[in-house]
Length: 201
Image: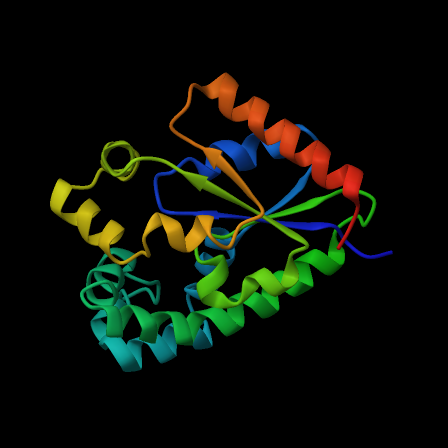
């Protein structure tokens, strides 16, 4: 039986985590690309060694772990460096996600929460895709509060991503993540019902 994999994407701070958490409460099996990416940067990972070759060996702590903030600062400093980071990490992440999907119960939907779903080519794993959106200033405030970032650092992270239309033009469904929580949940539940009724693609 084929897994019913649903992609979830959008710009940082739009509200993807809210949708993913609610989908999980409704019975979806959720795979977070960010969690898999942390595996890629784990101590001793061959991906981390390659990134050190590219971005400087000082991105590795004395205990072998990754200085994630320093890596992010350098990787997001230009579109070219962001692309270099992605080319290095995305193939490993997608291979790992395929493994995780294979372990899931095929009788329950799988939600693949991936901020860089399209950039990584991860949409090929999905039958349907949901994009979550929110105005720039809403996202800025959320990122600063969530990650304890300065406005400058938050804007740098936001600037490394595509415009909203990059996500919405490719998605099958769109959720406005700036709505009140109950409205976001209502939209998510309706979309998940529609996808389940339609079955796998």
